[in-house]
Image (cartoon, one colour):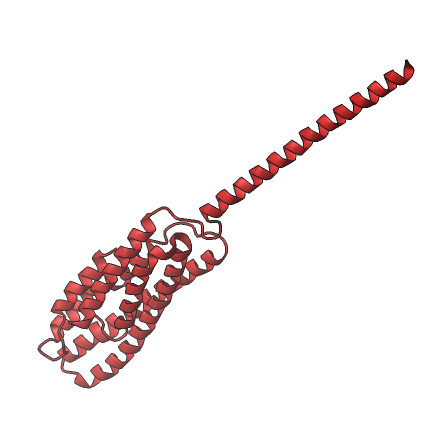
Amino acid sequence: MTVVPLVLAVAGLVHPRHLTAATAGHWAGLHVVLLPVFPLLVLGLLVPLWGRPRPGAESVLTVLAWAGCLCFAAYYTGLDAVAGISAGTVVGHGVHGAAGRLFATGDELGRAGVYGLAVASLATCAVLWRRHGPRVLPGAAVLFAACWSFVDSHIFWPKGVFTMIGFAVAFALLAVAASRPAKDARHPRGLTNVTGTWRGSWQAVRDMRTVLAEQSATATAAVVGAGIDGGAR
């Protein structure tokens, strides 16, 4: 899960800072290579959610996380194709006037994708909170900071590179939190034990009452029988 953001961080180190005729070939070629890599960033959210969600709110949150991941994969790939491959290609062929329009369209696609990733991150952290409690908070905090930075950083050095490192750290923290045994937030262990003890105690009281009632009935019958025998004599 941490491999993808680290690969993107390394790519950011060699990403041209500006698109010019001299860097156009490198710009377009790098985005061709990264075209299948960017969508894989969502693995850091999907892997901790692996498995069938529980019915109820967790199912809704999981579907929301899946939808956000799909949104990111679709729209950020659009950014890569439009502002990366297309813009690099047209500038490389001397068509400079079209690059601005391509960048504007790519920025809109990229923002939509990052917003989808932010929604998926929020939903994922909510599910993991229900399963694992407060230990997901460190990873969630780093993840939200990385999403906020990703809106306008792409993978450019230095902000974009550190953003990708932030995603790697967040995914690692969430994976560690999710690797521990899950707890049932609606039925905590302590409450279950108390409930079980209370039920056991109540059952013991009922059994004792039954025994005392039987003994009382036996004693009453014995007294009555003794009285009848005494009267007959």
